[in-house]
Image (cartoon, rainbow, N blue to C red; front, side):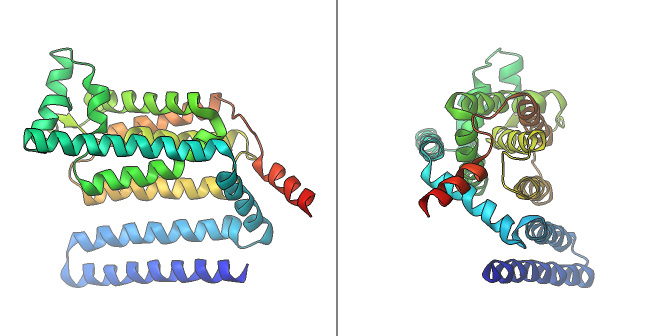
Length: 280
C-alpha cells in the first residue's frame, strides 16, 4: 500500500512539475503551444490524483482494483477480447500499409477507400463509412486509438460479451462519421480513424458504472473519465484536424448503451474476494 502511495505521489508531482515548467515557458516566451502542453500535463496530474484519492489511498480500494484486474487476467472472456481487438488492429494497420505501398500515398488510399464526404453523400458510397474508419492519418493517430482500444476493449468484452461488444463498436464506427459529416466544420472533406468507437467503449463503461456502481472497482469510472478528458482535450490542443462531432457522438452512443444494456456479470469484486477466501 505504501508503494502505491509513493508511486501516485511521485507521478502527480512529476506531471505537476512539468506543467509548472511549461506555464513558465509560456509566460516567458508568449508561446501558446507551451500553454496547451501545460493544460494537458495538468489534466494528466489531475487524473492520477483523482484516482488516488477516490480509491488507491485505502487498502480496500487497492484490493478492489487488484481483484478486478486479476479477473481480467484469469477470466477467458477478457483474454479473448484482447486477442480479438489485437487481431482487428493488426489487420487494419497492415492493410493500410499495403494499400499505401500499392497506391503510393495516404491521400490516394483515402480517395479510393476513405470517408470522403462527397463520395458518401453525392455518390451514395455508404460502404466508405465502415472502410474509412479503419484508416489513420499517421502512426501517432493509429497508436493512440490502438492503446485506448486495447485498454477498454477487453473490459467491455468481459463485461458485455462478444456480441454486444461488436455491436457497440460497430455503432460507434457508423454514428461518428455520420455525425461529423452532419455537424462538423465545413473546411474538412474527409474523416479518418477509430476514435468514435473507442470513445463509445469508454462511454459504455462509464454509464454502466453510474447505473450499477458494482460493475467496476471503486474510483475506476473517474479514471476512465480522466482518460477520456485527456484524450479529447489533447486531440483538440495538439491537432488542427479534429473530428469533434464524431468524438461527442461516439461517447454519446456508448453512454446510451450503458444506461440500457445490462452486463453479463455484475460484481467481479465480490466473486474475486470469495475465490480468494476459498483458496485460503
